[in-house]
Amino acid sequence: MRRTKVFGLLAACGLFAGCLGQTQEGDQARNADAKEITLTIVANAAQGGKNARGANWLQNWVIPKFTEQQKAKGVTATIKFEQNGTGDEDFKTKVALDLKTGGGGDIIEIDGIWLGEFAQSGGIKPLADVVGDTSWDGWDKIPKAVQGLGEFDGKRYGVPMGTDGRVLFFNKKLFAQAGLPADWQPKSWQDVLDAGARLKSLPGVTPLQLNAGTAMGEATTMQGVLPALVGTGKPIYDNGKWQGDSAQMKDVLGLYQKVYGGGLGDPVLQQEANGRQRSFQLFSENKIGVLMESDYFWRSVVEPKNGVAKMADRDTAVGWALVPAKSSGSGVGGQDFVSMSGGGVRVINPNTKYPRQAWEFMQFLNSAQAVKESLAGTAQLTQRQDVNDEVLKGDPMLTFIAEKVLPITRYRPGLANYPKVSAALQQATADIVSGKSPDDAAKAYREALVKAVGEENVG
Image (cartoon, rainbow, N blue to C red; front, side, top):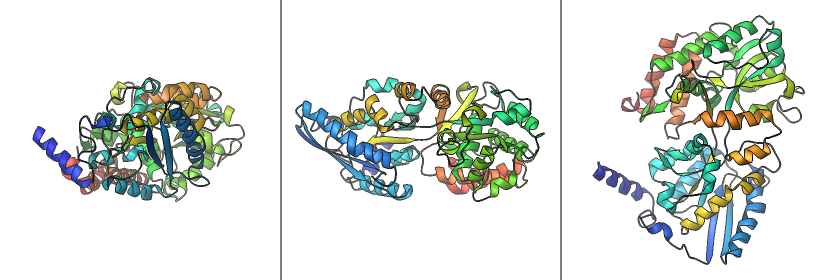
């Protein structure tokens, strides 16, 4: 076993120029006492373009402040920001090529969904292997579940940049008309279905919106299948295997059948090219009772002034509840309630000339002051609970996400095959919406999964 691991490491290093000799044991201290350093941070952000707020923060606040901090220590620091404003996949390809050739920035911002793929290819390495001692008082401020965004295969690779959480949003006005409580908190899937049955009595109202089908894309997976799966106690990827046509998968597809075969959801909406956007508009028009979404829905969709589907009475008309497991205690880890989250991660390039200084810069980027400054006065979830406690105190919904959802959330497996698996899951729900049985949809899903990842990788 030891021999196999060593051979695998050498093979991976062969793919990445400069790998050998860069991160060998004891090499984390190289240039640790340098009085002149140059560090580059790479992000898919550009001033005046994509993710402009983050770009402005890096250029106008982070770089001057960190340079000043280093100067006070007698270190002349040159900090460069490599701006990008490309599509996510183009940026991912650029980062992969940089790492493969032994180049790239010292600190790189990536989507958390790419972490495992980069780790398996050898492009990035566990943080401790790169910088040595990773002790930091900031770890205590980041919830353990959120730290998972920067972890793969039990090892820490980076620091989360921020995150989100998924809940059930509901229309309190429709709930009142249906005789449902304003403080609704379902404790099982059946509770949700029962609420849907009550809402069904209201004319012109679609009781439940559970994203389904291929037109919804990743929104089907993240705002539908994956939260339901973790509610069965078995995530999509576990012990090195992708979940196939298991009993849990059939349970999830059975839930979809009850929603769309039982008249509780709108099957046509799931097949429309702009179905998700249309569901937002219908909710804002008091025509959808319950909708599963991330906090993005609250702060950017139904936001009263600037939302894409404004609700003037959002603060009084919109309620939220934790996503229940299938039944009490049936969720992953024996949880009663579950969620799924996404977000970005900062990693340190194994090829950096200044590993200790890069780690110091990473800590600065994720300090309470820096994270707060990155928000530019907006109310948004961050990776740090102490910052959330301060900046979200005026927003009860986002506070709920920070306090109740983030401690129980899970993340997508950051593996190269994930997009193929996600597409297969979306098709399985589309099959249900079009009338297939859970057994038939699960069988077709498994066949697609085996074709995508190989029989040996399917559980």
